[in-house]
Length: 453
Image (cartoon, rainbow, N blue to C red; front, side, top):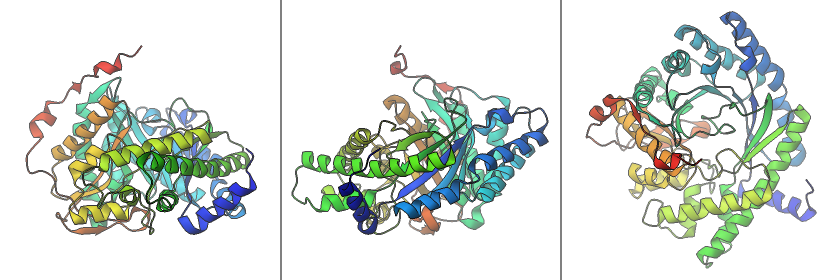
């Protein structure tokens, strides 16, 4: 991929002045050949394969980062959904395997390893149920392991038995990690329509359509988009979309260049570019502030969904022109705790849980890093998951829920998670129960648009 000198100069400016970074390089590794009737052998095979493939991921990424001058913030691993290789393992053995994954993550030096996962959108096998039962203890006793569960899809409908179970899983995880702000829940995602090549945590896993190993990239860049828009304060909305589109093109070009270099040096295929604008708590590195620059006094006010739809579409159009291998989630993340503008919107009263839910209809993923009052019931958590899954199912898009009921905290308080996870105001939940609906169980049938053949 040829890069012009002017592009290099512009990239340097984006790095130095506008917080451009590569959010993650993520190596996907298939563990399908690690299954065995002897669980001790499974553990050895899993550890060996991960460390063999990803042993040089961090040093190679750091060397490329230095050579090209563009920060690569996270180095990560995604693996085959673990439920698929558990076989007849017990819950205790599944927890042991989580410790093996954590050990492998520490050994390779990566920030996170994703794929402690199960796909149960149509039904649950015995190994799926084993994994779901193991998740709370696994997340409470590991540092870098991330987990996800698919509970719905446009083609299958929504598995409400699994949704009910996940309400209990999230609550138990919150209780087990209550001495650390219920942080275990920050490493868990419930999905509808998950993609199999997502490089972002906590929902990454190496899907069944992927090869033996692959290197994918997730870019960031809200600060670059924000600064570009500030240069056009009087542009109409069509021109605003064009500015975002051109900026996304440049960000994607830089990201793919680095990703391909890392992949080549690790001798694995390059996978995809995930274009998602991923905010941080750094100054001016906020998706919410982009929406406010478009013309909203405060994110969450009337017009927010239209502005977000404009931005999301422009990001995808620009990125798709820059790379033939766009994949993953590709759009805009709206994680509350990781975005200073979102935090201010909640504190000012313009942004609510209901508005965030509505925003997920037009952006990537869904309800992300939202801190809830610790007394939220499991059925309420399940109801939130069901609502978000319904949005994804009907709209044929990926939606997800990463919520954190912080035990001992009430609405209006602030919880500090630290690091990349940031801080968040506690949001209250509705006082009315969803228990009867959730306990009905069964499966919400797939919508008519599932009949697309």
